[in-house]
Image 1 (cartoon, rainbow, N blue to C red):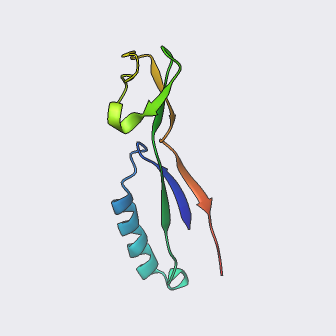
Image 2: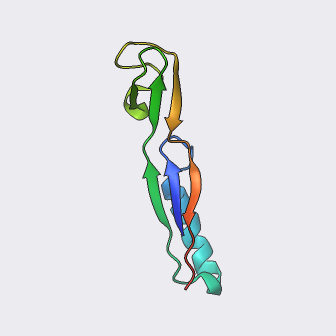
Image 3: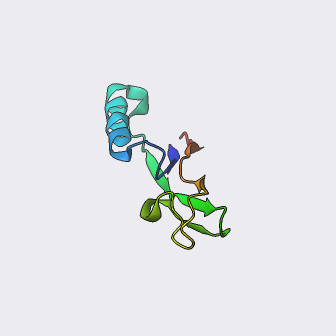
Length: 86
């Protein structure tokens, strides 16, 4: 199973992986199943200057113009990217 998890999605990858290991060990059908987590970097857009910047480093205040009129472009996703069954 492959997941896309955003940097600011509130999902803690370590905890998700721990739960996954518990589930895999519990069910015979899941033995050998692997979880792959792809982290999506958080990116914010500024309405003030029209530029994009990394959310984690700068938060809600644009580092280019100082505006707080910003919104998150990506980084809060929790998506199933792929499930492969063999």
